[in-house]
Amino acid sequence: MTEETIPRRKFLLGAGIAGTAVATGLSQTEPAAAQTQAPAAAAATPAAQPEPLLALNETEHAFIVAAVDTLIPADELSPSGSDCGIATFIDRQLASAWGGGAKMYRAGPFRKGKPEQGYQLALTPAESVKAGIAAANEWSRKTYGRDFDRLVPEQRVEALRAMEAGKAEFANFSSRAFFARLHTMTMEGFFADPIYGGNRNKASWKMLGYPGLPATYAHLIEEYRDKRYVVEPRSIEDFS
Image (cartoon, rainbow, N blue to C red; front, side):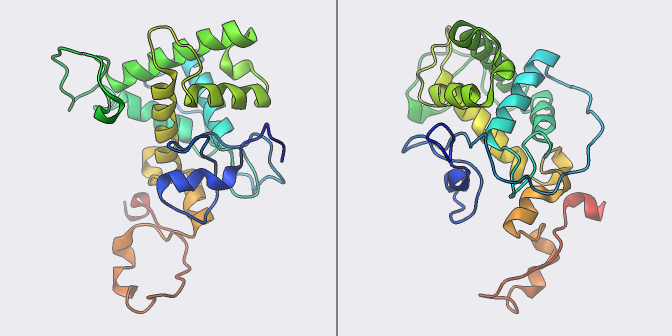
């Protein structure tokens, strides 16, 4: 592994799951992007039919696919982020009531807040992500001469590092805040129940040895206390 790649095995530390593998933290305070060059690929996930885009256009979708594949590259641990359905998950979330800011206070006034105050934009989450993608591509064109999804893997890693550190200069937008949103959605899509579009074929659950819905094994907790419980994971769809 070179200095240009991002060690994937620290990714879960940002999610509070120590000792497992997938991505990294590029700073002391935030998790970050994963390596783009990996060993032998994991067993391939069967190709899925293209999902219709609900919120993103083709350019925005291409950015998301490139970003999640940089954060979660295909290796011996799992398929790539897009093969796990994370781009589909993000598109569905942005098209949902959450993406439209249904439960957000949006009457203003909107003043610049402190980092610990969380999201302070007048934009809905979907509008924020779209604006961030546009700003990221504009910065990428100025820096590398092409959109983010057309960069070589090493440049994508470098670009995400700059965004995570807030060094990528976005016009009227925080690259650090955009990266944090992108990283969070990527993690959510990778680990969420497959019914939401990500974690296709339960790839992350199988990687972690997570059995799925707790209600299906609650009666075995005492029997397997301090012992490993190995079973094929089950999702919401398995009970539909």
